Image (cartoon, rainbow, N blue to C red):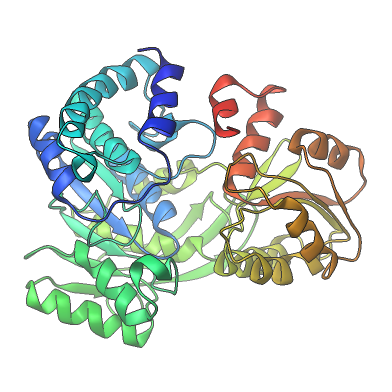
Length: 433
């Protein structure tokens, strides 16, 4: 199977976005693949926000301490290969296809048993990540939870350290409608006799985590209690922090931007300290190098960020006021239909002098005129351009100190790829179906 055929199969046969609860499918699929996840050590990271950045920081910490590192991140922005980093780089399409064909063969054997046993997109992709890491002979893998924790397909590993970055109300139809219920799901990644690191967690959620950890004889290391950080300076692309843990490290330059990143950096440092002694110079190198596209990133003259939920929108506004307080700002904005549109729009839109509303390239963004009508209620000035490529070309022509692309990660990834290449490649065109 060719690369685009494989993606077409994954997105539309499996299909992308369909959630299946339970671990029995992924457990069987991995058994059929001879348990690839047992071939290396792991970190396991969950949280309502911050888990992707923390996973990335851990990846680069391990890499800069001389280890060969694999990993699993989700979702991807522009290419599915982003999900499977090896020492911070994309794997080759050949490596992807080799693992894909193995997982496909075993998944289709399971399909024969009926829909209940048919692996979902995420289960298939999780098995892919584990198989790729085995084929690459990694020593360590940094594994980000997709959703929740307890029944997430990644929750078959026995990590060296588990991490819970934050707990807030999210995916309430799946995870539960209270902080305690969501904390219970996330604490499902805690394993017997393995330490767990937690960030800023509300009191009600914290009690649930501590109770589950006690049942599993897992020691909890809490931000502000067992380790801490302080911000020395916020400067775009060069944010400086001090870390206080088993080792005190002063003057760390964090390349990733935002007020949340020092917290994620401290959590990653504590988790890594529990794995092995930190070399200060290696830590400096890791945080200068660590990178995630589309997260408060300045790219080809545009600030890109996926403010797709109310919490992310609040954090985005906070960061705008730290880095670009006095700049005039205009934006390209699009959001999926299943998001909390009104909460995001009411927070974000008043910040901009002008907003172009567009349609993110996803089947989950059909009601874009509805989005535009909501934006009109909060905007100083706005317009609607259905096609995101026409919209970004219009934004290019307009004058402002800061031009922003925000809302859906589908939109951010699509526009980022277009800004980089000057065209939309075949992989991204699949996302528009």
